[in-house]
Amino acid sequence: MTRVTGIGGIFIKAKDPEMLQHWYKNHLGIDVQAWGGTSFNWVDAEGKAYVGSTAWMIGNGENFAPGKSAFMVNYRVADLSGLLTSLRAEGGHVLDETEESEFGKFGWVIDPEGNKLELWEPPVGG
Image (tube, rainbow, N blue to C red):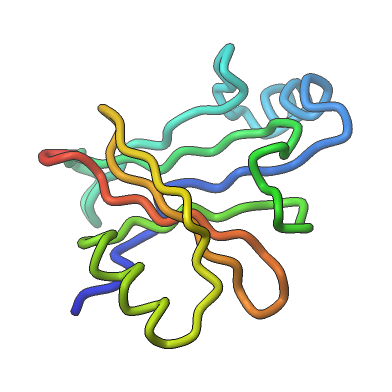
């Protein structure tokens, strides 16, 4: 079974999200949008665009619970349901909650060091 196919996003917990968003925008040139992040569109080795993007966001980290880290990585997956089933069978700490929306399917797992990881199956064509 194909498991992780790439990184869908990186989310950073900040004590002062607006200040840190401003810093990244001003000092690193990241186009931080009103929602607190941006999407980096994918390009191939020759710089030609193709379908896909990686989200990057700074926020208060409330959605990282029960994880304790100051970050959460979103991993693209090919088959969320199949992967969650496999992880449970392997003894993984898979959270019961899942979500499905126009943005795709989402599930979460806690790694052995307590980091919450988001697993994302993009919508068809995404």
